[in-house]
Length: 337
Image 1: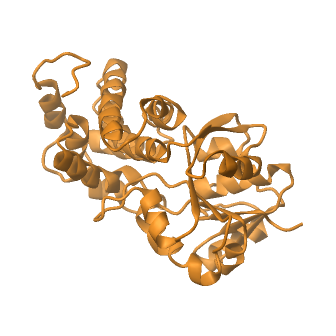
Image 2 (image 1 turned 45 degrees about the vertical axis):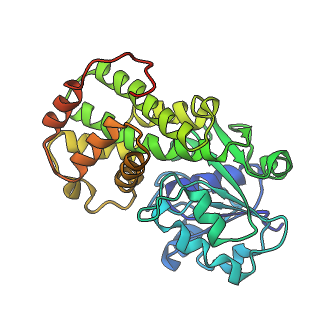
């Protein structure tokens, strides 16, 4: 049997996606940057570094040779957002070209420096690839365990691309829903990471469930304002890849971004909270570029601004929260909020 699907990135989420895809007996190639990690995954049939405790299906085979994946018709790119462009730029020279070549982006973030969403990064790095975005409320360990999960699969190539990709991704416990709103899927995934930091801060300060619910609702309003300004559709942002992902990520320490906020709320600095972590809290890199884009476009995002102040160490968490609570009172649905 030859693989029809490759996964670029052997972190927790990439490993979980490979495991889910191989659950029906399919062969999946999983690319790890470190040869040692690829060899260990193959020898131990698990990824003890990033997804401990999850026994991998026999169809999952790890490799550190990206060229092995370049001949496959479809790739899931699960490299952290800030490194995605550099990895994808290697693909054309390795032979990932021609039609159709489907590239499914699974990283959630905005590129620092350029302000580009991942679809823009991928389109420049791999000209001619047909881009899709997989996003939604997903914890890697639950997907790997085969627990029921639903996601958005936003296809720039429309229904024809969906017809190619959905059989490769859909499994009994992993249910993709079709969309053609790539921007909406990306905006939801990127912004929810920043808002999860804010909810973690509220937990660290022991502000209670009311405060968390308010942050989710008002954070969603910020997500909606930003997304609509960039051409996303409101119904996309109210679905799995927007509100659904926001609720999950803002409610559990299984979220790396929530855990980062929790540490900030308990008094750690961002440097202390991020030190020595094997995994990446994407919201920490996304927050400042999101703030700058919002300021440039005149979009008010006070929760995002507050997260940036905390990450930059400009004020203690309690002071930042007090500043949000002291904002002028306004109508909830006023467009300028």
